[in-house]
Image (cartoon, rainbow, N blue to C red; front, side, top):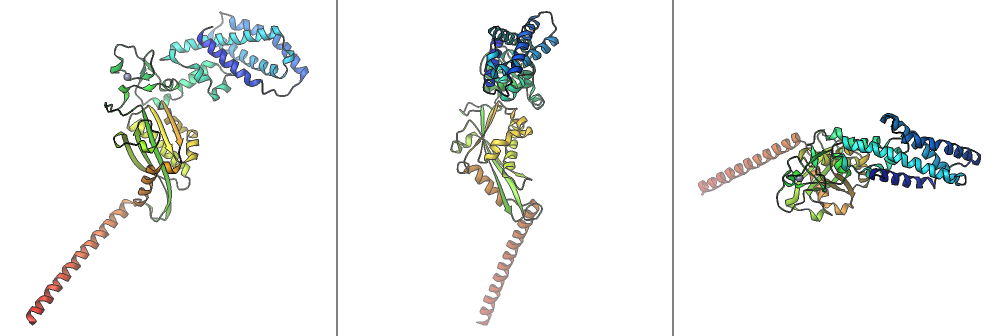
Length: 395
Ligand SMILES: [Zn+2]
């Protein structure tokens, strides 16, 4: 058995064990008939799959039909094991092996066609829960192809990435650390699936300063307050978020160092009700900035004290797409008391939430007050002078 064949067989066998617990309605008469049908049909499908003269597209259809039959057999076997005969068990196993062999052949072709295809981790792709469901009635090559192409539209604007035959890093084409090695192009999704990390050659500004630029940690916070005035001049609620971005995989905010800080900032959202949505906007903003302002594509870790956002942000397709631009993105929920720095930025911002026009007017008024005070001082001084003069003359 080839490597892919073996992997597929393992995956299908593991999946089979789940059916053993979901038995469904039992109808002995019907199940006996079904088993008779399998005994007759399964060997035929084994022969079809082993036929070397069929075209690829026909073979693909055979594989899907054979998989459907195999799944049905496994289900009936789970609820009525008493009707299974040793020859049927043997034939069914042969069928599964023939399915795996055919699919492995097709995966082999896919590996040749795809850049960096030899390194695709098919187990990782096929064992994802959403793909497990597809395994019963779709070809594995279609599932693998979808996984590879998942981010192509979003990744269009990124530079082409490269991987060597071995190693845990991905590179740019002219990587100085890879001189003399053959580098093949690789899609970002493929890099992500293999947990590769960016080589030093990809860090936007790599200095030999001991700062880990293979990971970015972000602390974000949101706030929602009643404010007495805003841009529209009305009393309203206002949503803000703040973010602190730092190089390195930080465990908490006390590890934030000025020299490793990438940027800090505050943002304003239209959202006036839900803190979860403000936080999700902040997550999107952080990912967007890292990808497009900093050309960063390594690992990202985001801390937020908003539990809802930490749990749901991935359901927003736009942010999920942004996340696919990186080797990994994790959003971690932390208690508010461990997010004091981002929180303080948000609070500070609330005091400054004045429109430019209002701010300018305030400054002008203040200048006028100072001007008047100075005039008043001068008048008082003059009066004082006059008084002294009068006293002097009077004396
Ligand atoms: Zn490199």
